[in-house]
Image (tube, rainbow, N blue to C red):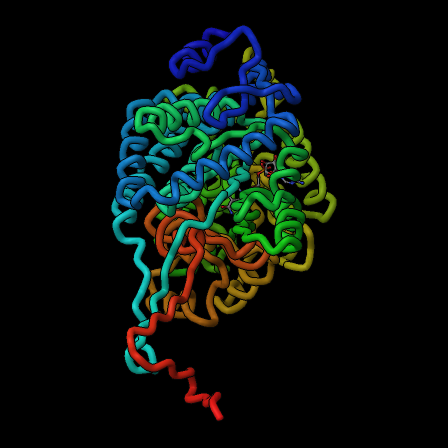
Length: 517
Ligand code: NAD
């Protein structure tokens, strides 16, 4: 291991000469395919991980179901107390875990640490929530009757997560699922196994300390086939899937076909709209962060920019200046703003998207190529130049505008009326994040109202990228309609029962129905 990688792995006790076990169900194991964790910054192999064999997955599912039977009877506030301890354990390792996210996923350090902070934040939130997961008493039309709406735990929740948030997405799910009294089984992305092992070590130590079965929070690393087996399993009551629209469509259909519960958090194709009265000193840096931050690898990254004709020239001049200032670097170094793409394959996707734009006659204002002249060890990494493209026209039926390219490519269009820009914003299949820049209250009203943005996140003078944990997070349309994290998202992790209780000496039927002769 290089001198840059070794300390990060050592700090979390996951450095090993041998292959690491990638399965946890109360005990560590793993005898399936070997997964390589490759550093996207240098190309160095960080570790090899033994994933779950089909038998091990079967055992993990069985043990998780057993653990659920124990855990469902633990009072919710007590479950909250366990989350408080998980929160403390994560906070104690926040910087180390954040550095591991940078090392293995490739996002810059402050974002890696921010991602762990998000797990800490949702754990905080859920400690309180564990005392507020309330049902309701509903007025009954029948004398001496009461109707209760009762939330009970759901069972086994499987979390299938994407590479780009290798810690936080699991955190959002685990916190709610655990507070609700479920067992949770995690299948992370096959390219971020180390993050999942480090997180599971932290969580399992808390569970063990509290004499809670480890299979309350199981881990099964693996690729597509492990994912498929989980999705098909009738042992899994809910599948919470975060990933691409392509895989989400398969997962959604499969779970639906066995009438399981499914929560989908899929791709985004997020637009920012800039009105003539926008404060450009705020809007330009926000679009820059939205499009270039995380090297364009957030589900909420800005991919489309719609500029009012009156601001086009000034906005693009200022944005190009910021793009020109960007230098690629080691995401672990404090001064770096641009890290690599996560995989070699992603570089190919970036190049194909730029080639498609060029072919369609788009003007490339910035970027458009890979970095080829970087010094060692960055020459082994997947670095691409953030790109601004101005296609000939806005046509939301065209793949250039319709499809999510998971890389730093921003397409720019020019509009004259807000209504036109909203139509473009809504004209794509995805509906995750959107952002309007204006100081005019009338525009705000239009934007957040019935004829406004149809996305799950509708921001005003705030960029598309990133979100806090307090509100429910998720997107509409082909983003999958899922909601995670705050708000009412917890209500999906329980099964609801309507319980009508008769306290009287009569047994009347509802709606006055008579059934006696
Ligand atoms: P992906 O769809 O390739 O993989 C996601 C997960 O699915 C991985 O764990 C993978 O191993 C697993 N998988 C692959 N094939 C499967 C199959 N047939 N059955 C079951 N599981 C299978 O996604 P990715 O490349 O890791 O992540 C990037 C995508 O995720 C982007 O589209 C991004 O927008 C999206 N994303 C969405 C959100 C959100 O909250 N909406 C958050 C993060 C990422």
